[in-house]
Image (cartoon, rainbow, N blue to C red):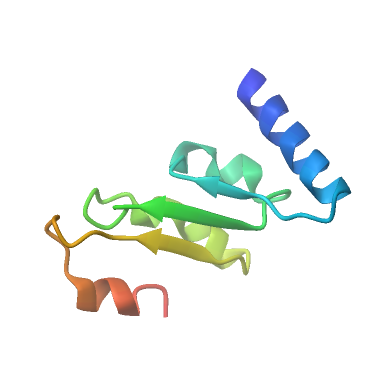
Length: 84
């Protein structure tokens, strides 16, 4: 798949320059990217019920940063304790 080759190339280029690279809002690419990406970023993953798809990052010891917005129906207390 071309998108995997591009993502791997981007990661290699970033790492060559001493940079880290992340996955953003693409839970379908989590499993194949854990070996070469350092963290994940999500938006509205809790309100869209996609948050569990990002768990492999946590299991691999890699952080997930999520942005949840106040104009959506989400339990912020649950968001703040998720993954602990």
